[in-house]
Image (cartoon, rainbow, N blue to C red; front, side, top):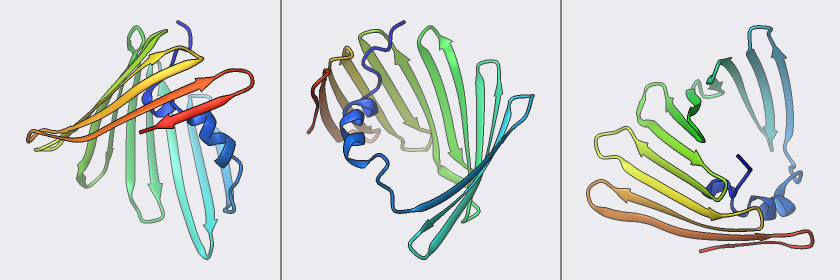
Length: 174
């Protein structure tokens, strides 16, 4: 499979990176260690003005399953489980913050040479279901992002387009 257009969140990323990548005024220090069994442990500290933020992240990979667990300065515990190649071109991502029932969500992504589809469902009593689709290639990409409140309302409808060649990177978001 080729790279294809990617996902909706990828549209315009190269154009945004021209303006924002590597332009940070924050001071960040990161230490990472790897084990032979596939476990990665990362600790980072960031100074934003007079505020210090820190987190510890561990990542474990076993076959096609990756588990990430992160603890931040406020003692929040974030967990993400990713299953790659659930089917050809498809992966599933389950993420949640421990002790926050509203943070649970399940995302399914499918990538193809000329399309990318992502659907996300909040695992709550009245979830908001998000669907995004992209068509195109490495030069021209068109995509839409829709969110539905399961109580019957369309809560978000966005459109993005991107054009990339050797001399020009352009992106439009509506």
